Amino acid sequence: MSEHSQHITSTRLYVLIWITLMVLTGVTAGVAFIDLGPFNTIVALTIASFKAVLVVLFFMHVKYTSEKLTKTVVIAAIFWLLLLLVLSLADYSTRMLS
Amino acid sequence: MSNSDVAVEHVHGPELRHHFADEEQQRQASSLGMWLFLATEIMFFGGMFCAYLIYRLAYFNEFAAASRSIRILPGAINTAVLICSSLTVALSVRAAQTGKRKLLIALLGLTLVFGLAFLGIKGVEWYEKYQEHHIPGASFSAADLIQDYPQLHIDAARAQIFFSLYFAMTGLHALHMIIGLGIFIWLIYGAWKGRFTPEYYTPVEIGGLYWHFVDIVWIYLFPLLYLIDRKPL
Image 1 (tube, chains in turn orange, blue):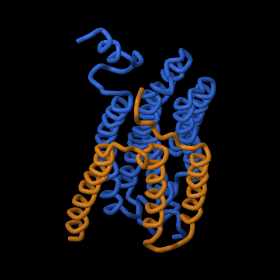
Image 2 (image 1 turned 60 degrees about the horizontal axis):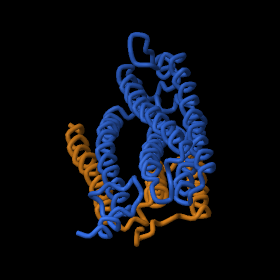
Image 3 (image 1 turned 30 degrees about the horizontal axis):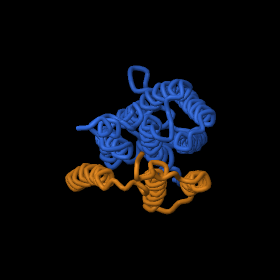
Image 4 (image 1 turned 45 degrees about the vertical axis):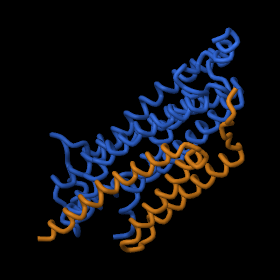
């Protein structure tokens, strides 16, 4: 029927991603108790973002979609969120000092 | 137009709508629509994350103390539970793609179990906060925080802001989980009826996208609410 064939991810890859996510959860919980100064927050959010990227690319199949519009929407959504957070924080973090 | 042309045009399953060229196009259109919805969801949760970040900057000491009052273990277990449920969802999409109906039903059922386990653990955590008088409102008390962290000069009203955000964010997330459970019950019913085939499994894929999104929200809630203020004072 269809000339295209949808991508079917292997069970092996799914399990590999799952193991990575579980290990990173353990790492982020463990690192939280070590005093890294301001880097605690940075490390925690970096690990969270890495986990989120893994979920989006592999579990949500964005890596394998041939539809460029889908990828555009994903990138646009992240861009809007950063716009909201960065511009709001730029405002509050500079004004609250006074 | 001859009869054979008409016949050719209709060689497709009943699920394929006439305005799509083929199953692939229909599938991608559905997926794109779901991603657009998820973009609005990111902004929905984004507002709360923004409020959290601003108040965390303003009331740093209270957030540090209040965050430490939340036990890390149930949060970590819940993160693991959600990641496991994301795996069963991903595998259920694969089961639908490969036409394994029984495996699909089993994996969707497992997802349901993980989802209920998450909500159960969340309920226990909320009950602990209730017992500690940490639920914002008339009976709210930050006396324990003020006593435990005298060096931070805790303001009770500011600590209440942390718990307001905690309950709003985990509550909104839990609401999404409950909606997700409803979607998965519907998917199990559809799989039971044999509605999903390797040619048509869009509801499983779309429901899966929703579930993974809810998982990602928790992936950020866990460090922000539980982890980033754990280092020794």
